[in-house]
Length: 250
Image (tube, rainbow, N blue to C red; front, top):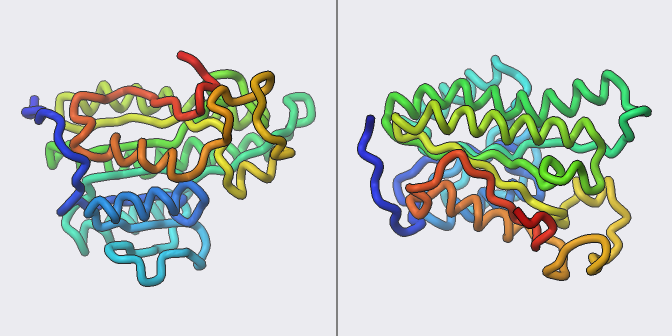
C-alpha cells in the first residue's frame, strides 16, 4: 500500500488533468478552475468549438467519450505529450425528461452510453496508469437526481447517474491501496444550457426546490471538484458530495 499524504493546499502545480465535457456549462468552468490552480488541463468535448482560446495552461482536443478507440487515442496523446495523467474529471453528459412509459430503447441507450460509458471508458483506460504511478484523483459528475428520484429529469437519466455513483464507489475501493482517489459530486439544478432544456426555469421556492434560495452556478460545482481533485482532499475517497443548496439533506 502506498503512503497516503496528509491533506494540504488545493495547489495543482505540475499536475496534468483531463476533463471530459469540457466545453459545457459546468465542464468549461471546471477547466478554468483547475488551470487557475496550476494544472495543465486537456479539455475535451465532442465538438470543434470551445471557449478556451488564449486561456493559459488549457489545451482543447475533440473526443467522444462513448468510443473506446478514441479513448485509447487521446490517452496515448496526453501521456506522450505530458508523461502522465494525474487528474480525471468526467463532466460529459446528456439528459432527457421523458416519463418511463413514454421512453424508448433509443433514448435509454443514448443516455446510458454518454452518462455511464462516458465514465467507464476513460476510467478503465486511465485508472491502471494512475495505479502504476501510485497517485491519481478521479472525479465524476453525478446528480441529485440519483439521490431523490429526479428533479426535472426522467428515469433514464436518474438510472444512469445512480450507476455513476456506484461505479465510483467500486473504483474507490480498488484504488485506495494504490493512492487512486475516486469521488463524485451530485449537483442540484445548475443554470446551464443542458438544465434549461428540461425545465421551465421558475424561481426556486421554499415549497418546491432549494432551501438556500437560488439555483446553482457552474462555479459552485467547479470549486467542489477542485477540492476533490487536489491535495486538499487526501483523506476522502468513495464519497459523493451533494452540492444542491440543501435540496437533498443527507
